[in-house]
Structure formats: structure tokens, C-alpha cells
Picture 1 (tube, rainbow, N blue to C red):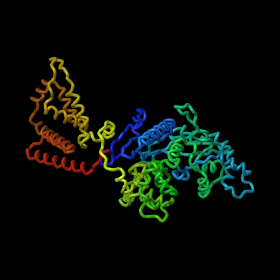
Picture 2: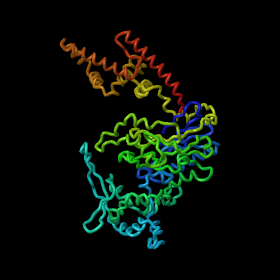
Picture 3: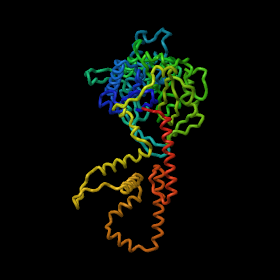
Picture 4: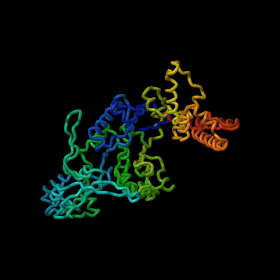
Length: 559
């Protein structure tokens, strides 16, 4: 995680705000103190196989406690980041919203399965008539191996797909090719889901039986019940579908926003009816180009801070290449996500994401607003979210001075590096200091070694550079150094004059290699063959230091 804050706007920072080594060591949260309020910047665990639900909820509970601690100290809270959860059904593409089939069947039973009731949608009648068969067929499901081939490299991959027996000698395959048999079967297992809270030993239900998403239900009706719903019917199903109300992370974030003093989802506050506005898409499946994504990146603000948020007319959302007559509709959202079709996906054969045109890249820029900034797909599978405060907000916060406490220092590791060259040479300096600090004893004399001279230090530095680049010349030097000195003398006497040009050429090549290395690192201590070259190098280094100093002053970043 990383938070940038201008000089004068921050008092302190803490990269271990949970006071829990297990959670803090994950680097998923950093808190910055801005006087009257604090900002928690987080990357919540995604859940699933890699991070089971108990671990995710442990993180969210610790986050709630940390925010409450700040409120008890009289500070308001802003929570931002990749939350890996959803709070509203509009945060999910309509086809991936879920519904509880058992609840629909119960409704139909109460209505005598829709007989003589024209108000009951046909899709509900279809579901009531065919769900028993779907359940029976799903009992035959099995994961069968499938092999896929990269069309470009011809590389083959072993995958698994679900197969069910629909009738005599009639099989249907469901879903996509998955990495494992367990993963493939998981998508078509609709048992009740639960986990045990490690703190209370309580069994918590996180998904009721027969809850599935719209696209899965559409597939089952088509391939097993032979009932094909058109897009309009699918959209009707999606209108009744929503988020899983039993999902603990969803309950957690909704709990934050409950009551008059709860936190405010600023995006949904200004755009309550905005459709298909997502912040992340499946990159490998190239879902951004059809705008099938989710909104999991949030800006949540304590209610008292809302008076400082810049008012919004609800029409400032980015819409791609040009404004749209309905900025809250799905078409405008699609244009924004794809830059009006200018962003193009990569080939499944490899080669990466297609390079965007300048016109496409320019669509990410626009008037400052609270909303979404549609950065290009090549930047990330996520886009940025933004929050615009009133111009008077600076008066509210006042001029602040950055503290010098231990937590603030630990939260600014970048300040340990003065430049790029110091970053690259850090490892060689570290090894050199360790070597010089050791008081080693010579085996032959029993005397302590004297401190290395400057010439020896320079030689060691050059040696570390060569080892960094994997230089064959360095290997040759090491091999030569291991040879017996008598053998070296004999070899030197035996050398003929015809080898001299080769040695001179090798020496020149070596000098050129050293020059290129020193020019890369901008080393002002480079040895040159002439005083004029050295003077030019010193002047160049002086100019670089002056330029770097100006950049550092103009940046004015503390954290």
C-alpha cells in the first residue's frame, strides 16, 4: 500500500495501525493522520481458497476496531482502497447477481405455481416446472479432464470441466475450463456454505442452499431443461436477483453505513441509480471490453465530513470520448470503460494488451470530480476512484507539520534512498560495510587486517558492479586471481608480441564497458584518461545534483 500526501497536509503516518503483528506484517493497511481526520488506505484480502473467510473477517474486524479507536480520540475517518466486497446489487454486472431458488419456489407454491395468475412472470413458472429435474441431473456431475492449447505458442494445458448426464447417452458440459477438478465442481455445488468463527467457535452461514447467479441459472435451464431465455427474460431475472444478504463482508460494509452517523459511500451518495459503473474487470478473460465487472474500490467518509465534500449534480461521471445524454446509464458506462471502443484487448495467443492510441489514453483526463477515473487497461485491472473536496477544506485542516516519531519514519521507507543510483548501489555498500566492520584475523600472521584504502574500496565497488551485470570479464579476473603467481610470471614471459594487439583491444573494450556502467549510475568518481574528461564529468554530476534538488523541492511530498 502507498499513500501520497503533500507537505502541510499530514501530521503522521502508521503502517502498522492494527497493533497486530500477524495482520500488520501483511502490508495491507496504512493510516495517515491529517489532524482532524485520518485516512485508512487498505487492500482487503480477496477471500476464497487463498484467504478463507475467517481470515478475511479477522482483517475487517481489526479494521473496524482501528477506525473506532481513532473516533474515540476525536478524529473523523475516511476509508479508501480495494475492499474486495460489494455493498449494492448495482456493484455487480447484472448477469452475476444471485438469487435464492428456494425462495422463488416457495413464492410459486404459495401462488399455486402461477396457475390462473397472469401477474407471475413466465420465467418463475419455468423454474418451478424444471428445478427438480435440474437437481436430479446435477447429482451426476463429474469433473472430466480437458486439454487446451495456446494458439500462438502451441503450449498445452491440462484443465477440467463439469459434465452431467441429461439422458440416455446424452451428456452436457457446463461452465468453463478450470485449473482443478475441485474448482470446476465448486461452481455447480449449491449446498449451504458456512465457516466457524475462530474467536467464538460459532458456525456462521455465509450462503444459503440453492443460491446461484443469473448466468448459471440461465445455463442450467438451457442445457438441462431445454428452456432458453432471451436477454429480456434474463434481465427480468436479474431485477429480482441481488447480492447474497448472508455474505459476511457485505454485512460488514453495510453495518458501517447504518444509522444517521454511519459512513457514506460517496460514489453511491452522488450517483444512487448509476448502472454498470465498475472498478475492476477480469483481465485474462478480457471482461473490460464488454464491461462485465464489479465495483470493489470504495471511498467511505464519516458523515460529519460530508459537509466538506464538493457538491455534485450527478452528471459529471466520465463517459469516454465525449459526454453522454444519460451519464448514469449502461451505455455511458460501457463507453467510459472502453474509451468508446478505443481500448482493445490482447490476443489469447499472447503478446499482452494492445497499445492504446493517444486519443484513447486522453479519455482518462477531465474535470476534477467525485467519481471514477478510467485509466487504461494496460495500467491495471482496476481503475482509480476520486473524491473532490471543497476549496475551503484546506482551511478546515489547517497547516500541519509532519512528525518525526518512529511509526512515521517506518511508514516512509523511500526516504532512506536519496536517488535511483543509491538504490542500485545499496546492496554493494551494505556488503562493503559488513566486510570492513568485521575485525577478521589473518591465519598466517594472527594479526588484524588494516582498514581498506580508498583504492581498495573503489576496486570492490567495481567488482560488485560487474557481478551485478553478470560480467564474464569479472569471472575471468576471478579465475586469473586464483592462479599461482609463478605460473602467471611464466605465462607472461611466454607471451609473444603478436598477442599484444589483442590485449590492447581487450583493454579498450574493458574501458568502454566501465564507461557505460559509470554513465548508467552517474558516478562522479569515474576515473578518466584525461583531465578534461574528468572536468566534464564533474560538471555533469553537479548539474544532475542541482536538477534533482529542484525536483525534490517542487515535489513537496511527505508520505
